[in-house]
Image 1 (spheres, rainbow, N blue to C red):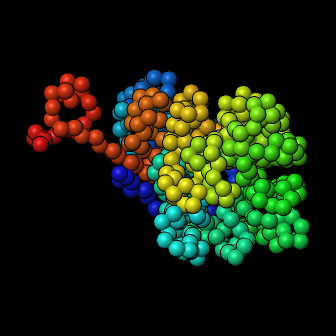
Image 2 (cartoon, rainbow, N blue to C red):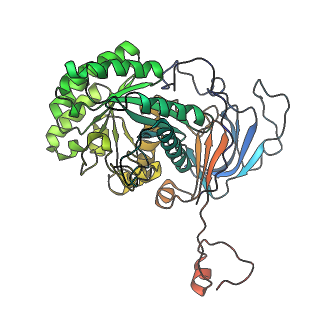
Image 3 (cartoon, helix red, strand yellow):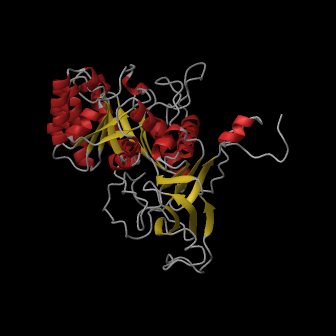
Length: 450
């Protein structure tokens, strides 16, 4: 049950190209204020538990973590350095995080905002601008409530709908500014031969409109190798990263992609690559080595495939094999209640839970796949719970990562240094001797319950 009360988003900045893929000049953790107009006020997170077991107070300001200190030591002190726009040294607002584990916020590297929430449409899905914008906005807010302060949305272009869905998702991006960072991937269907000419032109137009990543589905084109060549050439021409859908069941194709991508910067990501798990181990291992050598990352979808491949895979990518080869492996949610997965949740912590419970990763490794690795795949600055880093944080009730992946009910989401979403859960037990003896978590009552 969510009791989120996010503040109104800040107006979009003037100038710049679209949604910003995060691949601009890098800034160190001690750099200036966060992009997009960080808040000038300060926020004190009191009594938070860190993954190393410490309990601390954390002060945020200017969109970054300003200071971490022992509990109670920051409450009476003003920030050592106020943001330039601050006109007074008002005391920091305080959020009590007693009983919460404070983590770098997850990011969602593989969403489909244009098709989300359509599983129960009961007829043809509408791709009118208003409907697509509503779905993209609502799905991004649902993912934000789970903790994802940044979302990469793959958007189909071409066919009967042209660039309409892309325009609608870009409008959703603008309306969400200050609440969550939404970036877009242009996904054309055909790119090769005469039939692909319109797709190539439309892909260039999508980048001019504001799409920050070039995507696609080479598996669905009559000439998959030509499709890969075209995408990489256009990405180099436009200075965009690449994020492709592929089942990954053709090791020769993956090896060819890795060789072509080696010199492309800012980078190439593929997913969900469930087909790699169906290959013989030695064949999959050689493909993983090629991906690592080419600097190609993989985004797996532990919660199920998405509809973009127009088929349902049966297995998740072999994350342990890929990681051991040196491939950066991020995890995404994929479909959010659409044809690809009618019960998809869009919850990064569920993706991490599945990697820990079924994928053979340790809990900390599983969480890293939806946080640090996901942010790296999206070209976003690194986040650590340390002074100087961006204040993109998630507080989850619990004391260890394994515990919060198991029972991640109550969450507090912080984006650019302010609380943007809350989810509160209460568990109650009837009055009984055993519940009292075990001190089970429950809501207190002033009178005996039934």
